[in-house]
Amino acid sequence: MWTRFVAFLNRQEPATSLAVFRMGVGLALVLTVGQVVWGGILDAVWVDRAYGGLHAIHPRGLVALLGGATPGNIHGLAAVSIGLGILLTLGLGGRLTAFMAVQVTRSLLHVNLYADAAYDSLLTNALWLCVLAPTTRTLSLDAWLETGSPVSTATVGVWARYLVVWQLVVMYTSTGWQKLSSTWVPGGDLSALYYILEMPSFILRDLPWLHRVYPLTQVGTLISWLWEVTGPLLLLAFWASEVPDRPQRVARWLVRARVRELYMAIGLVMHVSLLFLMELGPFGFTSLVFYAALVHPREWPWAGRGSQA
Image 1 (tube, helix red, strand yellow):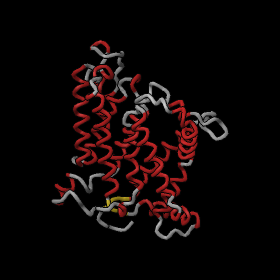
Image 2 (cartoon, helix red, strand yellow):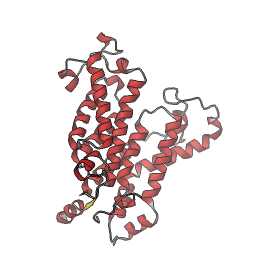
Image 3 (cartoon, one colour):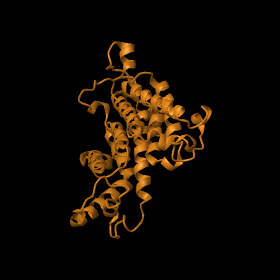
């Protein structure tokens, strides 16, 4: 069984999906750090109080090695982080660019515990996946320098894309199982989404009509909770879509019912809706970046066939 498992993960496939994931991660990095810079709150969030920031910073890692959260250090790290995000998006430097990006960006995102968010860890995890995986084999400047064309037929092991999907499933499932209050679970009043959309700290604008569609918010609460806690079903559906012969009846049903596509559609609607309704930072975009791994390289309309996985 172990031999079959290793052989399954060692199969080769075109590098397209990993490349799209890499480009998304690079853009998410630029968005995450850039919104702090362009919002004019860089000093307030990450600079030590002694130099004009809002909080006393106890620097760790790279910030500590550079001498603390001074304006010069923070401004420099932010510029380098955005620059590395651009290079990652363009696909120049391979794993080295991703490694430098995760070190610099992580030192910024976690320097102020008062401004630390869960999606910061999601971004750094995505960057680590770009360190582990060869994400610049195609749709990259690396491919152009190596082959004369940014589009390459080079292949990668499927294990890398599966790690990205695993991270996505773990995130959604763990989030769902932490929502066990009566406002979320079936049998309760399913009022969670309604109250969240009424919280000034989250909403982008007032929604005076929200009480009129309260039943719809209850339906949305139920769907979002069930969608998250059934994350393992997505993993199973994803596996079923990857198995060539699908001898199992359940696998065939999951493919016929298009469970993977349904799950992706619900996630897309949810994240895009929240993007226009709530202030959640780059969480929605960063989450959707992981969806690239759910798409088999053969399914991208512009992708070369490469080798069969």
